[in-house]
Length: 218
Image (cartoon, rainbow, N blue to C red; front, top):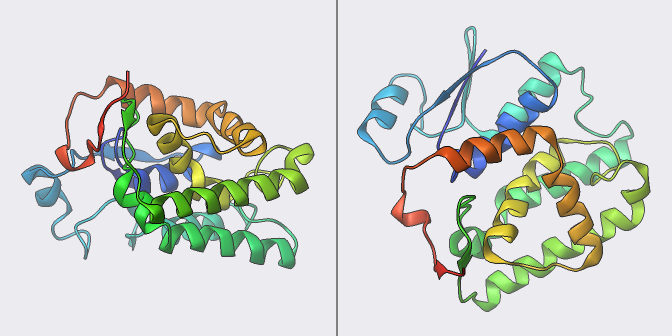
């Protein structure tokens, strides 16, 4: 099984699929491609129909989208354990994961993931609305499940993988989402797999200008 990813400092979608595979200790080959380079597109050409990362190659199976990769891994290797067991909670977890997957466009545009940096951005009203909704999700899930494992649904799930890059963004841009949401952020940051990803990101030296939003805040 081979997973193509982008720079760990910047690539949020790569983090999501990588985190699921790493979290469950599955064996895979990681290939990091530098974003916005000729080598990036040359490597993916003929493999991926979109020339984007993440891209999973598992024998004859090719999966080229983060949530689809998570679903494939969950069904093929994890016997479904990466979603909550009950249909009701599984439906809610999928709803939250897809809300992250397709929404929060202002936040994603104005606050690109940049793990190495501490930045300040003047946020639009739309981005502030996105932040408030994410804080609401984390607060409500912690109120219900915070004492049952500390993840969004008690035990870790694909929903946590989908929101992990937002935690990185909040750290970079100094967002304070409130006490219960902050408790969730601390849980994510304490995860050994997240710590490995962040350590690798801090060692990178590549610069992607489009992801260097705002101004330094230090």
